[in-house]
Image: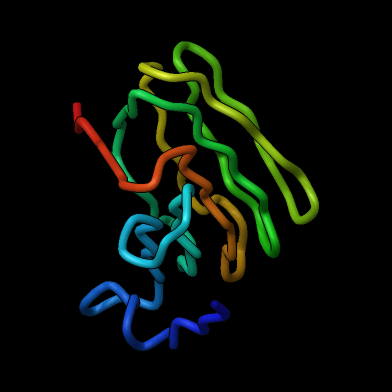
Length: 111
């Protein structure tokens, strides 16, 4: 069965970011479609599954464990399960990034 999930139904309150929980829609994956201004991003956290980021626009500085990497439009980054990570928009414009969670529901532990 085909389904379209309108953006306004998964938009995080007070945010431009979308949060898709796969379990609610018959999908085996979940994702955030992030839209952040410079300086914005989540603090350190971790998941019991891999997370894959695809930067669509802008620049993200990503902390993965003890490493820090910079990802720009077109780049992909991956973090393994149980590794502390977070990102910040360190560009001068909007950061748009898909954060794919290899789980039908998001499980997150904040540091």
